[in-house]
View 1 (spheres, rainbow, N blue to C red):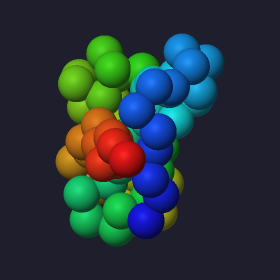
View 2: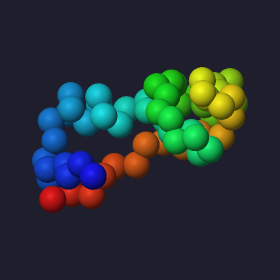
View 3: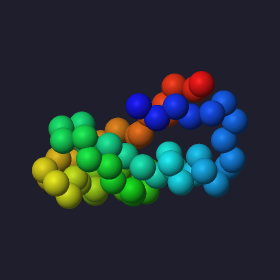
View 4: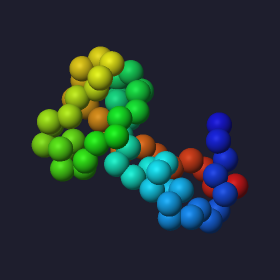
Length: 61
C-alpha cells in the first residue's frame, strides 16, 4: 500500500488521479475523459466491461 503525504503538488495529484478510472471487474486502470466514461463510450481493454469507477485516493499519512 502506498502512503501519500498530506500535501501533494498539483502536478503529482493530476498525474495520479486526474482522468484515471478503474474497471470494476478486473481492476485494471484506464485513462479516459469523464464525459466519455459517463456516456458509456469507453470500455476496459482487458475484459471489455463498461463499468468503470474513478480511482480512489489513498489514505493520508
